[in-house]
Structure formats: C-alpha cells, structure tokens
Length: 267
Image (cartoon, rainbow, N blue to C red; front, side, top):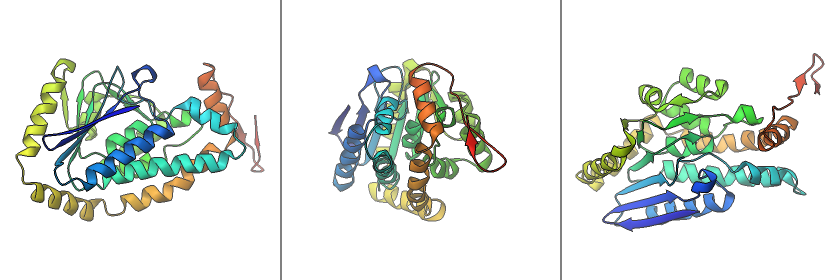
C-alpha cells in the first residue's frame, strides 16, 4: 500500500495503490503513521517527502471499506477507530520537527487533502486538482477543517467544505494551498530543486523555525483535530452517510433525508 525509503537525509513515503487512486485503508494509514514515527526518531532525516503513484495523489478514504464498517456489529466503534487512526496520522505529520513536502502529480480528494495540508511545502503538476466532496457522500471533512483553516481562511474553507467543488491546481496556488505549480513533465525536477533548497538550510535552524511557526500560528491545530474525531465519527453514523456511500458505490444519485419542522427526519 505504501513504499518507503530513507536516503541521503531524505525520507520518501509513496502511496502505492494506483489501481484504487491511492485510496486510504486503515492498514495503509497505520503503515504511514509507523513510518512517520520512524522518521521522527531518525537522527539523519532532514526532510520528508510524500508522493503518490499513478494518476491520482490520493482519492481519500477507501469508501468500500467504509461501507463495510456500516455492516459491522459495532459500526460506531469502528468509525471512531477509523477517525482516531486518521487523526494520529495527520497530527504526527503536522508535528514532525523537520520540513515536509507533498508532491502532487494528480488529483487530491477528501482525506488526501488533510495529508497535503499537514505538510509544510506543496508542489503540484498543473493536472492536479483539490476537492472535498464529503457532503456529497453524506459525511463531513471534520478533521481536515482545522488544517484547512490553519493554511487558508474561513472564507476559503467555507467554499471548499460546503460547495464540494473541485478547484484547479492554479486556483489552489492562488489560495495558498499549493506553493509551486509546474507542468507534469517538470514535477520531478521541481521536487529535486526543492529538496536541494531545503537541505542547504541548517537542520537546527529549520527545526526551530518550524517549531516557532507552529507555536505562533498553529498551536491549537492538533487539539482541534483531536476535537474533530467525534464529529467525524458522528457524521458517519447518520442515515445520510450510509445512503451517500451506497449511492456512490452503486453509481446513482443519493436520496437524502430532510429535516421537518418538528426536528424529525424523513426521506
């Protein structure tokens, strides 16, 4: 599900499910979190790169696996566990003491956006786009929300979280979600240039700078993600969540419930 490498002070984590658009499974999230902890404990790593194989960087959570959770004997417990695993991944990535770089060769959706937002630096190919389609699936991007607010603004977050629209890499560049935009054929060169630039800096100075930034502007982000665990799991418990996931997998329009004046819901 992932490939990892540590070489010449650079750790690389590659999402390796191209046939599933690098969708995230629980096992894959756990494997990513273990490697990030390995990187954190390393005395030699000065930069972590996260990239993906295939046409998409990451399509978000594996919706078929999420659907299977709904059929479990204790789906609420399973959804809470999924939310906790994802929280540990993005929180540990955000908190790494060394710089992190996301390299986007293609689209980034849903939970994949959280991984990108947890990174310090982002470069992308022009073919990439960003989308938070969770409401279209009857769920929420609760744990992505704190990271999105940290990187952008309430206005930008509202647009992405509520509209569900995809934004081009060029638009994402203007919003500050991406730092460098290049042609797909130039992505490897741009990545190598960024690596060289980061490695020219003092490891101690870079770590202190990142720590300083987080204390000034991001001190509450991890606690906000922790708070969002319950909200994420709670959204998955609704009828709309089950209907949204089923409709997506069955390639049909969902039949949402609507709230009535007495606070009840009906089809």
